Length: 379
Ligand code: MG
Image 1 (spheres, rainbow, N blue to C red):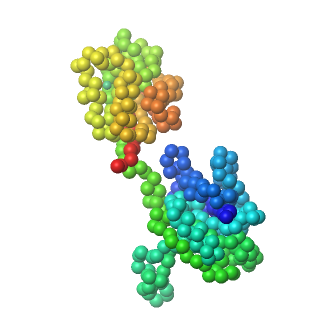
Image 2 (image 1 turned 135 degrees about the vertical axis):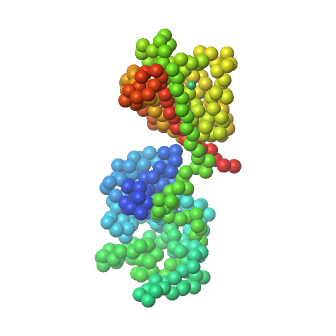
Image 3 (image 1 turned 120 degrees about the vertical axis):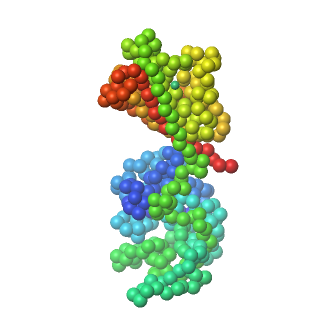
């Protein structure tokens, strides 16, 4: 049995208020909604996956198709869903037995639901995934509304599976008459025959509204904040984020007084409920006299990774009147990212003066403020 899959991938996703195609939303780890959806069809009996894509997203989808090991084919999206599917139908394999049309924004389709739908299609010729209505239903009309018998209502999902040739014939008629349909079942029913329903489930919902995307925030997500200040004195090195910076003064402290790294460690410890660096590395302990703060950062990272945390990103600000840090920021970011083992894009450091106000403005000290975000799976 050869199954071809069509995924309409156009649409501005205006209801999600993302400002871009919702299928390109990053669900974490650099994976997009559409990649997750495509993966629902990574199985032997799926021999072609046709994506109908809009011009605006073409470059993204071409990269996706090239880097994927799955049999992905691209076609032009149309102005309407009906037009997009019609274009995709021209790209089916000539010997495919069934075609499944699935919403690109339903990335939670389970293997069990798909298996049942395929079995239903083989037995009955069509399979439209749907689930019983759980909410009470009312028909809206000019004179108010009227209760409907919920037991007779099904909420339609996708995939919807058909034999290719009757479906192509039905689509040809719809296109010739310039008719548009919200799903394939209603089009098929109009021109061919009634469809067979197959079991759906509530997790196979379509990502539509902003709150639908909240489920991609990991359960154990946490943010921490850290703040530190050290005094600027003569004859000390100035070290920020492990990078030594040429200056006529440096920071005073028990360790190397790397104020930025101290703030970052406190942010990480705060996010993970591990107290602070004062408690972990007391300045009364000679073991920490003159120690590189990058060594301490490595210990903090090991501690929290050992507790199962993943560090998502670091964002920090250094407050210094002088020296100008702009030319050092790149090196500082790389240094912190490599010490923590993060992608450089996950570490942002900025620098600001305080317009000559306060102790920073008088060049008596340098402060740093950092945020860290982390997550871990809840057991
Ligand atoms: Mg400190």
